[in-house]
Image (cartoon, rainbow, N blue to C red; front, top):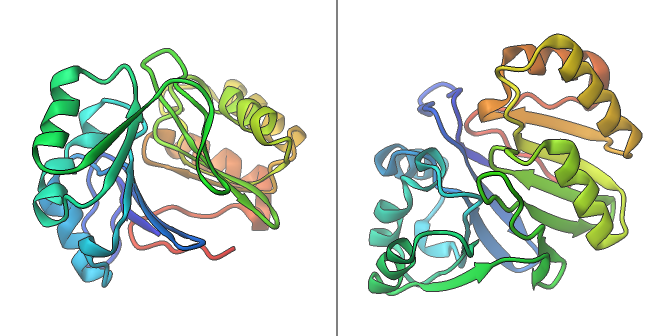
Length: 229
């Protein structure tokens, strides 16, 4: 479920940033925390999400629009394990530990939980994406795709040896031209991506192009959007 995105819906507030709640097997994972803790927690409350049900936090990269809500969240629930790229500043990691949470730095591709993988840290920026191994194929969730969404999908396939069912998150294409976006869209389809959900920093042009390319398999992203697989 999307709980933080540029685009809100109804009483759910939109703001620049990204966060999603993942319920998979017996895990409840908070993927990124948006840029503002008040907005994050208010949206969670309106969506009926109890912060204390969350067991794990997965941070994609250091930028504030993905980590800014962490501190308010930890005030509500510090009994979590936080997976983050190893390149995060040491004082950031120590601040998490000081609040009572556990920190697990990630450098290389790794299975962090059964059927849940990190792509490992990818550059530039130092960003990891999460991979869920489902019966329909892998689901890949990205924060901003600074390393390139195609590269991320290729790595996810290489790690799991599975084809991608769904790719969602920020694709960092808001400054890209139409030709570039169309090439990326076609490449993702050639890699086997069946469904697509561009969020956050993907940009309006990318949303239009992906919607045309994927048709009924395009999913519109907004706060409150829930996807069941």
